[in-house]
Image 1 (cartoon, rainbow, N blue to C red):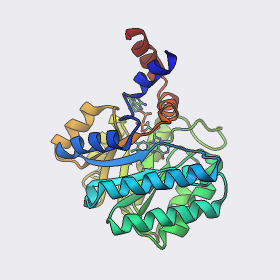
Image 2: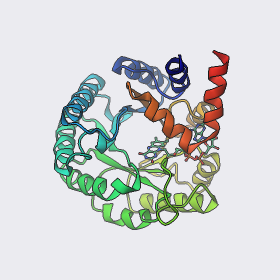
Image 3: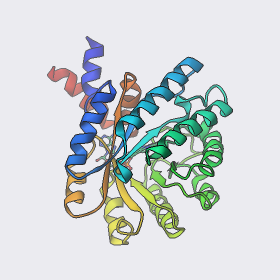
Image 4: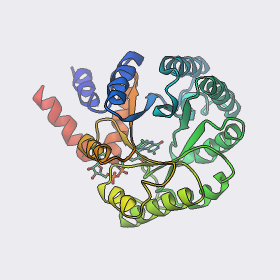
Length: 281
Ligand code: FDA
């Protein structure tokens, strides 16, 4: 019973459990003129067989997406494909996926996880991105280290996605949601674009988006706005109609509860929404 109710709450943000669900929702958004990112949900995988299964699923997703050029991309967590077991395994799996994506001319994106993993994620990313230009990386504006991490990516061709950060972190490591974070966020976007990177401005914060538009950042070459499926869809629609490049990030998979937890952690009112959904059932 509780499982069913939680799942219903998660379905606001997750397209479903199967690849067909993700691809179907993605196709509908593509038909409306959005670009898409797709993620098979999973993280902190502790067994090699499960990592292998994740690589197989991600590869099948790449094959199913086919040649969609820049309009579709695939995202994943390195801890879903081996980072928890061995950095080398994560690298090998990332390289395998990137080689397959290169054949399909598809872009990949490595997500950023909690700060305990940041160093290893960047290490694996830098190594792989120097061989595979089709891999981008996500950076979290809330981490104090991020302004120093950005210049080290300058020589790499991959796109940079800038997010605020979904994980609860200690004050020594990160700043919480605040005006200071918004200022830092925009500085990072400005710096990354100024350095010639292609940048995904990944936020639903209307004030940041308005300011990015006011400063001309969203119309710079290589810039796009990226938003999560189910969050502020009216805002995404409005910006798309106004002619800005908008990409929607969709997820699918059996581990939808992980994804729901992240959405609640970054925006606690979602907890009330989830409970209200349950009460309505
Ligand atoms: P903020 O949290 O301040 O929210 C601004 C406004 O947006 C809110 O007032 C509300 O209106 C709306 N909103 C935001 N979140 C909402 C939610 N969950 N439900 C309903 N409304 C909400 N994080 C990470 O740590 N690693 C990663 O790899 C990624 N990847 C990623 C990809 C993409 C495409 C996006 C858009 C986001 C991520 N994130 C992420 C999540 C990111 O770090 C951040 O937690 C969320 O984007 C929410 O932060 P905002 O920038 O939207 O601002």
